[in-house]
Image 1 (cartoon, rainbow, N blue to C red):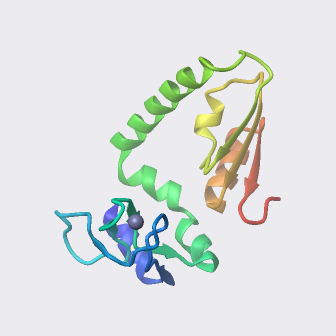
Image 2 (cartoon, rainbow, N blue to C red; image 1 turned 60 degrees about the horizontal axis):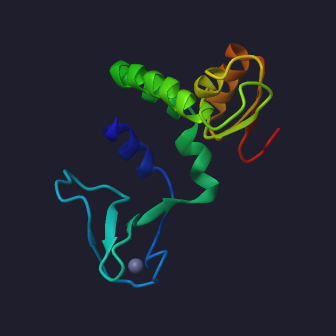
Length: 156
Ligand SMILES: [Zn+2]
């Protein structure tokens, strides 16, 4: 999966993060000690306040290039990880419901992929998902007609 990220990242405009988002220091150290190979975006640790952050972000205009088909590729590459993710969705649902009534919730999932997590909540809720991957939104619309999908940044 890391190879897919790196190949995609080479085609994208990366905006370098020069200052710590918290204290604005320019002094940082590599965070990923066991890093293998060059990556366009690396985790770094601020030498002043200790915040760990990524030293680059994908340019806003290139976000759809990175995320279109991202979820589908992720699931095919590692089926074991996908199974773990589905189990995590059930655990997250159970945890969430400890703090909510059992019917009539308005649930928003930002970065919802195909809506698999939202679907764990069943039919008695108003479920909305925002996703940047248009392939995932298309699949989600056919899998879960009771979920309202919004394609970021268009929010159709
Ligand atoms: Zn800092």
